[in-house]
Length: 306
Ligand SMILES: Nc1ncnc2c1ncn2[C@@H]1O[C@H](COP(=O)(O)OP(=O)(O)O)[C@@H](O)[C@H]1O
Ligand SMILES: [Mg+2]
Image (cartoon, rainbow, N blue to C red):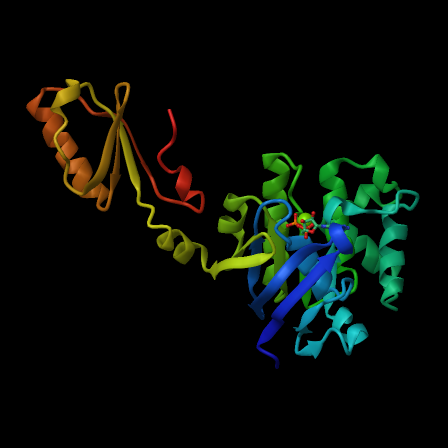
């Protein structure tokens, strides 16, 4: 079986013409392996949605090629599309239809005709059994996002594309959606998810491509991406010391005072903490409120501004 779920090679794509022309993708290459949860991370306008549209065969390429499960999207768009389930950004659900009717309509687009029982089971799986006869516009934001997920799955696709599925959700609804995404993944499906939330990319994805201005600027596992930023853990503790009496602590790379708090960027949090205790003991002071923050994808923000 094909080892790559998606293979994007040297893809460029644009919108508009003349002075309005926007180069939305510039020579983008990326490979998504079967069984991954792969993240496309980047600010608004980076080109994430355009890349998904190209993979779906909905947007013309100026250059390059795309294969879905080994099938060329340009030359074989129907069988390639059959491999994909798509959750659109901004959940553009046809508002006049009920949840059940929407599922049926999307399945029919792919010439799939699930039984009513199968559709009800799908809705129930996403906590929407009660909503079967409600229209999308009568549903909450979280329910609409879950309905969009159900729609993405109605054709039982191998590969699921999710375009910012959790934007505009509150933290609780976001976590619930993450769990559903994990469950979909555990069924053996490959997932590609776009987000501008680093935290989300880090918690969900096995690998992440960082996009900016139409290009992929980095692609790796979250932990490798974090390592490559050179960011280090930060130890923060409250200790009252005379301002001029903070000697370098073991392992410390950078130290700063923030009121009664001492913040230490360190290569060795344990050694730093040990020498902090020794320093405190010499001054007969207590150390309180100790926190060690590991660096994350938002590593640039690791030493918070005061
Ligand atoms: N329908 C469109 N018409 C013209 N420009 C567009 C259109 N959609 C997107 N763009 C432009 O293409 C670039 C990439 O957009 P998009 O793929 O939507 O980024 P993202 O999904 O990362 O926010 C941006 O500069 C955006 O303004
Ligand atoms: Mg987008």
